[in-house]
Structures are given as C-alpha cells and as structure tokens.
Image (cartoon, rainbow, N blue to C red; front, side, top):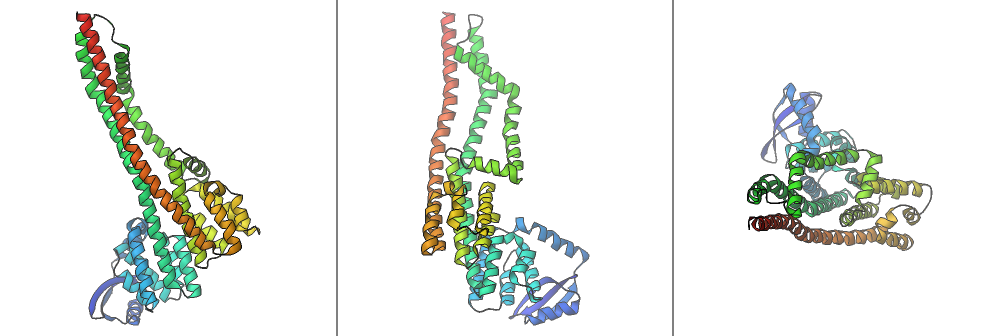
Amino acid sequence: MPVFRYAILKNGARKTGRLTAASSAEATQQLRADGATVLNIREAPAGAAGENALIRRLAKYLVSSAELELSFRQLASVLAGDVPILLGITTVGEQCSPALRSAYARIHDRVREGSALSVALQEHAPFVGRVSIGLVQVGESNGTLDRMFAYASELMERARRLRGDLLQAFSYPAFVVVAGMGVAWFMATKVIPKVMVFIQGRQGSAGRLPPITQALLDVTAFVQSYGLYILAAPIVLAILFVLSRRQRGSGETVDAWLLHIPLLGGTFRAHANTMWCRTLGALLGSGVGIITALELVENTMGNWHYAAQFRKMRQQVREGRSLSTAFEQTALAGLCPMARAMIAVSEQSGGLDSSLMQVADYYEDLLQRRVKLLSRLVEPVMYAIVGGMVGFVYFAFFMAMMAANRAAN
C-alpha cells in the first residue's frame, strides 16, 4: 500500500509522521479518528516505502533492549491509567527511535483494522521475543494487558542485566589474554632477536649456549616462522565455533560441552538456570498453560542443550506425565538440582511460579558471585603467565652472559 507523509495538530502540538493507507482519504480518516487535525497529507516518494522496508528489516539490530524495555514499561503505565490501546501505542511510539516508532505505527494500523495486539506484534515487531508476545496474548484474554507489559519489561531488563554480567565475566579475561599474546609476540619478534645477537657476539665461538638460552632461541625461531599460523588459529577456531552453533545437532554438542568446562561451565549454567526459571515462573504466574510455557521457554533459550531438554520435557508433559517426573527424565535434573526439589514440592502444594522465582533469585546471585570470582582469578593468573615469560627471557639472557664471561676468561 502507498505510504503517506502527514502533518497534524494534536493536543495543541504539531506532529509529523508516516502511515500506510489505500488512499489519502483513508489516511486522513485514520488520523481524524485519533482526534487529530490534519494540516497536510501527501503520498511519500517511491523510495519511502523501500526506506521503511529497510528499517523494518534492520529493526532487530537498530532497537536496543533498553529502549524496548522502556517502551513496554510506558505502555504498562498508560494502559493502567485506562488510556485506550490505540492512543497508548501512538503516545509511546512518538517517543521512540525511528525504527521502533515505525514498528509501533504499523502495529497501530493493524490493531485499528481489528487485529489482536499480540498478532500485530508478531507480524511487525517479532524482535520483542516470543515470551513477550505470549504474555501480551494472555493479557488480552484475561484483561490484564498492563500487568503483562510490566512483566515483559521486567523479564527483558533482567535478561539484559544477565547478558551484561556474562559479558563482564569474559570481556576482561579476553582483553588480558590478547594483551598477553601481544606481549609475547613483541618479545619473540623484536626484543629477543636483538638480545640474542648481542649474546652471540659476546659468546663468539667459545662454546655452546646454555640449554635454557638455546631453548629460548628455538622458541623464537618457531614463532618467527609460524607466527601467522599461530595468530590465525584462534580466529579460525572462533569462526568454526560460531558456525557449529548455528545448527541444532552440532550446537547441542558444543553447548553441552560448554556447560562442563572447568570454572567457566558453572557460570554458563548459572546464567541459563536464572533465565529459564524466571521466564517459566513469570509465564505460569501470568496464567499461561504449562505446555505453551515450556514451548516459549524452549524457543527463548540461547543454549541448544537446554532447549533440547525443554523440548523433551514438553513432549513428556503432553503425554500425561507430571512436570516433576518429566523434569527428572531430562539433563536439567543434573544441571539445575535446586529446581528439581522445588518443582516436586510445589506441584503438590501449589505456588510453582513463586518457587521458580526463588530458584531464579538463587542462581542470579550465584552468577554474580561467579563473575566476581572470575574477575579476581584472571588478573593474578595472567600476571603470573606474563611475568613467567619475562622472567624466562631474563634468566636465559643472564645464563648466556655468564657463559660468555666464563668463556672469555
């Protein structure tokens, strides 16, 4: 459909924007239905539709999680104040970035045409995530749309903070490792060769170099000969790692291995356990059915191995088994032992959603403590490694100097 640019006067303020309609008359009618006075409306150039299509395709990357959280929190506030949904979408959308504002404009038009808000979100803003869309669908069915937007915003915020914690846990170690490799490379290619030329000049033909000095020369020669391959190896491994995680089969194998890496595996498990416990607890507490909730959690897990366990658990619950029994039959029983006991007790006594939230709080606290532990461990370890390299070079240098002095005497 054509894209129209408009200028309107609404609530005493002049506003501009775009909308899609079959004709200018229909576009004018839509704007007036919102209580706006149309000042100007005209069809946008042909490139405008293409521009909108490009923004739509890139919206997933242009819209930040923080902006999405804020817009959902604003929607929750305006809806709690009994503001009509169409007016609420317009009000919130006008305060967003171009990409999100464009998405809200399309959602507004779709809802105006009679579509459910959850359907409009799925069509025009799938980047909000299936869990958020599922919560909106529940809110539409039971009249708690404001609460569901608040729940969705809270889940997004917690997920963003967890990602930040995980990034913090591994960004500093990665930086230190790269810096250590840079120091080693500089020493092997610049410092050591010059030192060895000086030593060999003092040594002359008086005798062989000490074993430790010869070992240093051999290592330096190896790095100079194969240094590019050494640098390329981590890059190739990283590319292979990313490609392997794009497929379900290889991704499950890689992710299962990541969960059991010494020291790091516990951090990955704490992050995943926090995410699924909080998401499942929020969904169940919002009235989502257990089968639907398990499916939504499966589709939001960033770890293939965890997703496979939820797929297996969902199938068993569909066949009539209890959630606790199905949980016991998956690897989750070993990956999240606290949830195993809580689910078994809560199924009998009720309050499964609150129990899962308590488990999520425990693992979130555990994740933060592991992040601090990693930060504290990496620095002294890397100091020891870099210091060891420098000490090795100095020791080899002085051993060679002593040998040269003995030969000269």
